[in-house]
Length: 355
Image 1 (cartoon, rainbow, N blue to C red):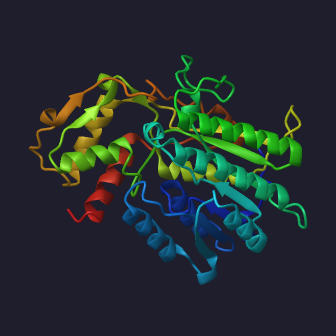
Image 2 (cartoon, one colour; image 1 turned 180 degrees about the vertical axis):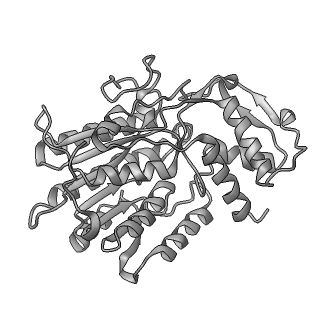
Image 3 (cartoon, helix red, strand yellow; image 1 turned 90 degrees about the vertical axis):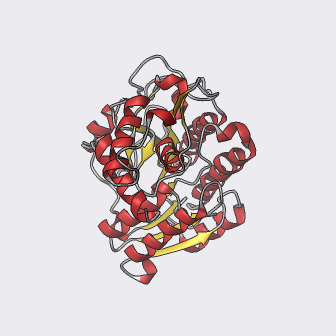
């Protein structure tokens, strides 16, 4: 295991995408575990999906803050250079976690501009701000940023290892995430920014993103609509519960990487459940938990509301994380079962929508 070299208990921590699914859970966990830290969030709270869920998460953050000064939110986009520079000048973050991004494979086909703005320009602005943080002070001690399992494309070798070649993205979203890794390496090599990229694998849980399959399926079933299961149900996904993702991020935050063989202080890790599940099995577990939570009635006709359809452009057949490096370096491996995670989601859904 690697030794911790960053004490988060007194740090100024910047979290971009703080109203997002992972970002909000990370902020709450940081405040609970490290009450002496100060967290500043940036989020433009856009309407890519229901803004009400983002405001709900921000309300939970406000409730979790142990003192008024522990958390502050700047409403704005990381693609706005003036906002990013002002935050770095005034807050002087010591640890930066960049989670702000336009997510979603299919939406990248419909609205590519959003991906170039947030994932490319926005990330570039963060890197430049980190670079100049050393001009008049000690600057950023560690930059942690979100990558994605999408970078693996249609790699035939499974499970996916961070040692694999990832030069053949099959979606614009994947291409932007791979570009983030390349940019982070270049800036680490040129300017000494310690940076760690995290390839997340299909994150799910309570108060998640409505564009994700488990949430979208539930919304449709509630309305009596038909759910479409792509690739005729033959896809597999390495579903990772959000609490496991947050634990992994915090473990990584506390260990700024040493210089590697390229001369850069740079690392990349997978964070996944290391247990891919067939989509038809996933849907079966989801429907059982929705019935158990009384979101849907026991006699719901699930078979009558399923449609098996072909693969969508940009999708891949399987995601499967090799988390050996994460386990060796941090002694951590995601462990929440899919049933346990979907049960937590179903109970939250019932409460949130007052069913």
